[in-house]
Image (cartoon, rainbow, N blue to C red; front, side):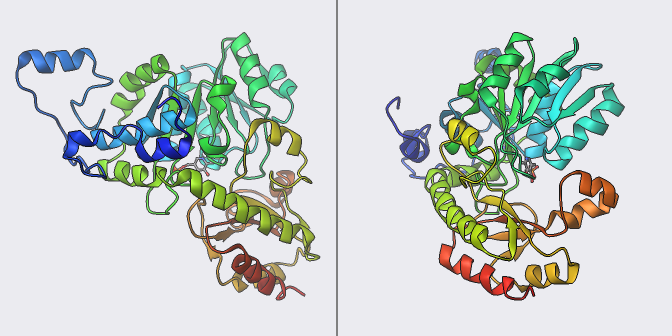
Length: 395
Ligand SMILES: Cc1ncc(COP(=O)(O)O)c(C=O)c1O
């Protein structure tokens, strides 16, 4: 196993086919509990309850195979799958903080994670969060307080693709005995390995690339064995946001093609980004894979590839023109989420304008003409042709 590349790991690692009659694909263990021969056997199982199959809120063999593959892919010791990315994020954050503690986050993290820290934890547990820009390590150093227990990163961030210097921030946090979590959904462990850069917990929405087929909502936390065993007996067992066996089976199916899908997303996305960057009706394309990207050098240093989610800004700020483009696309489907096989478009203004005043909206650095696209696995030229014909609808 040690010498296996990630493609081989995803195909074969953690699959003991003798245990399920040689079936090439493991079954869905659709059971809530496991039975034992006698007192001694169930007693022994409880002695190692974070690893044993006792009750499917904790462990389930189908889910475990997927967890072992993800841990191997990320270079972590343990992974735990959850019913959604937010269930994973909530479990990881709660694991790191107690009432009255302080968190440092970044401005542009995923909205509900932001709300969790900004409002919910403050209201329920008196936990304050300082949100920093995050492109300078100094931002974090200056925000540290005596009660800071957690630094929460998202690099690249999924809204504006801001990068943080992961290794330097992990080092700073360790010096101050502060735990670190990173949302690594954008890059996936195929392109970025934060645990190997010193981060304590990596979280993902598996509803994006790890799932990849737009047919499952799921999340995962990955980390060191001791940390994850403690998280198991607290946030997994007590909060109960577990993954269902069939979802585990779907994720297992998805992992087999994750490395190859990520390469295809990257190839397509780079072509689409280059097309957009050169187009006269486009003002800017903040995509970490383009050499023109402001933090391109940092990206090159800490990532080995780029996924398919990007944004671009139309030159026009006229809403009718913007809608003509948006509604004029045929191949790009309109929808939230990202990371699936299908290409999608969304305009952040649609949701932000429901929650923010126009001045708050502008202060975030977002414009009406900002488009977010998830470049899928279709043919790149077909996608470019679709964008071109929709751009022709803009005067
Ligand atoms: C970057 C990022 N993290 C976390 C989440 C939350 O994941 P889920 O929707 O699976 O709960 C999302 C969902 O859009 C996301 O984009």
